Length: 123
Image (tube, rainbow, N blue to C red):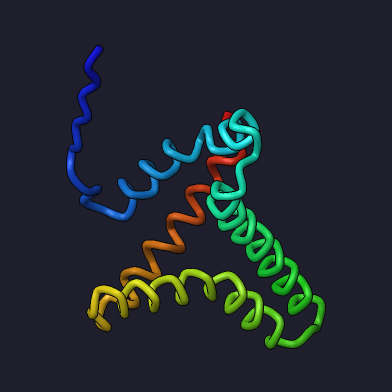
């Protein structure tokens, strides 16, 4: 039996990229448990879970501000959410020797984490 692989190119927009990662991640949790919870697959689950925790922190920090708290909390929470995407973008841009790619890569990594987070709750 022969198996063919067809590559339709890269997604042309961020929305297409999001939908593609949402589809790819929709079976991530089931596959992780079905494959015996291999450690090498743990980062693909940890990254979206980190995004979810970060977004909950951002929401909680905004509620705290509405109740009279400091603006420092939402700023710190947003930094917490964005940190992995920025670090991964920095690492990748250094590897490919393209420092101007840091911002677009950070947006892409953040979008990836967000799509994979949403995919964890998709049935």
